Image (tube, rainbow, N blue to C red; front, side, top):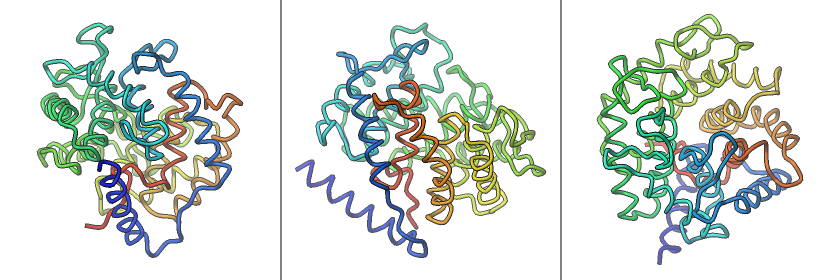
Length: 336
């Protein structure tokens, strides 16, 4: 029955997606990229620990990394107990749920309480939201609601979020991740105060560098050769996802992302993930131009084992490459 429901949801989302991008050519995935994604997922499956987690060097068992790994598997249609890697997702999800605290914070129980946990928390809330939206599991929904309530509660006065689970403002990267989680939860049916997202987007706009058409890390200052291009692609991405209508904040900075990818291809997977999402969301015209430069870089980085850098990089890489599969709802541009 669950499989039938999932298939129905997928067919519906495919129809909506096709309508939304009717003016563009079809976005597909080449056999070479499809094979690379399969190898990467096989690698991640082989490195999952018996308790359902993943460990990545100095990061240890980080809820953010585990959440990204889960979404990587979901990006090719795997859900808890369903799909080729359904067992992997089920184990990882169970581990993630166990990390939830009474306060709503999702943080590895082995880590110091009260540490810089909001980045991982935002990613966990995003993954939980995408699972709940497609399964309606009560245990997932219970953890998700409290996780979202916490995000709303600790928003800083200036509209952004810091790395600690207290009301304090912070940089663009941590803020975008919280907005992403809130947007996903809202679309899945969880109540999110409209003012929370509006306040956050207003804060991100204040960090827009009009001269270079780029979003900054903590203020309106950024260039294509700076060390904060990830903040730029993240800011551009969230403006697309939240349907900002002014092209000054979406299309123009997105073109800068493509230009950076073309001229300086040696970027981290974080920049390429957000760049992939924002161009894909805008349609085939932009995504096909973007991936012309992005895909060769990812494929070149992939080792014979299937990994694309470390565990974190592999998960980011799969998510950047797999968008045309259309399995993760928050990445889809559905006309409403």
